[in-house]
Length: 431
Ligand code: ACO
Image 1 (cartoon, rainbow, N blue to C red):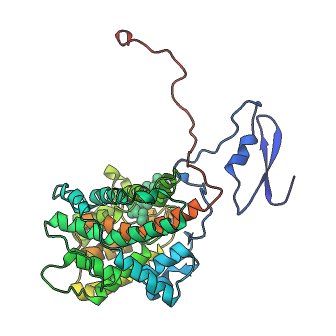
Image 2: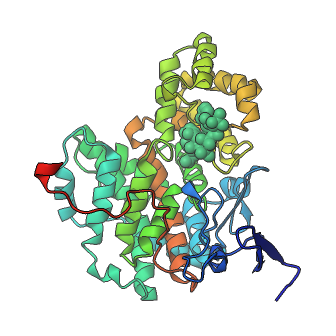
Image 3: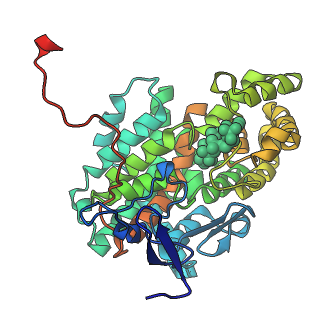
């Protein structure tokens, strides 16, 4: 029945008109299936490679306005969370929808802290990797292996069990990541220290040597916590969509998180901060910037300005602004990162250049984060791991939301078949 909130579509092949309801500025793709030329047609589909204009879920977790450069978790602006919250509080917010009370936060922090240990057998998994294995490859394998220690994790509709797996995953991420680093550098594994905060404990497992009690610099701990907050969720990006798609098969959360990590590893997603450092190092000095920009504009050898551009933000990424400020605080402790000057100049030139202005290409979260990580002595290979650690809370919040959503089914896109028409098998002699 016709309503104002609807779309009338006329199929010019048949002259027939169809009424399709509009809800939340969206039409349901499945409503187009009734548009047919013949009764036995499959019906009209939408073609949307890379999901440029398709909402695949309803979500109450993260809001982004890409044109205005706004990012909010559960309604709270990212700038306020970065200034006032901690990563663990933010993770609770993402998972539960509200900020925790004092008691809830204390209990949550305690639970996460006491779940940081991993089964000793997992160390054998790590030991089987070569010294130069990429830590992201090790992380993906370790998360998957971790899941095998909790066979009950497959009971994903058991609410208490689901909560426990979420706690384990968030807690053990820093241990797996820290152990992976120690394996890389050939140092003995440093165990969690329950007196430390989540980010401090991670630094402890990365860098502790002979100290009885490791005390990381509070400014660096806070900077890492802020980076964790900024990376905790970002609605339906490539890795989160992977989490949802893989999770939609009702596999256990460890397997789904491992898949999301694999998606994050790619250089167009969480691997970009590593690429930014490679790019800045290759540019080498400020006077080489104009020539580099020209190379990017000509698309020579597929060169891109890494850390620039975003599918959703067509304005300055709000996270990049916060990270840029945090960088100065970190450099006060660590000393200046010489690549910062090149980055600042590159940003200045790019933001004035017509190529970037026209395409609305601004610095994204990865443009400055690598500089901070490098100053904090994280090897470049660890950068995507640093992204994955906090993103686990966002992935798990999105996964839980999906499991509770009665609209969701196993993900299964359609295709437009472009292959050969039916033909008969040809014996090898006749080919
Ligand atoms: N450098 C140069 N040109 C660029 C860049 C860039 N970084 N990003 C986009 N463009 C150009 C494209 O070539 C295209 O130009 P055209 O219209 O002349 O063909 C135009 O801008 C539009 O870009 P798309 O590739 O269509 O944008 P899309 O939304 O598909 O890609 C992406 C977004 C993947 C982030 C892209 O901007 C990119 O590759 N950036 C560099 C990698 C990066 O920093 N990734 C991190 C993203 S943030 C994150 O995942 C946490």
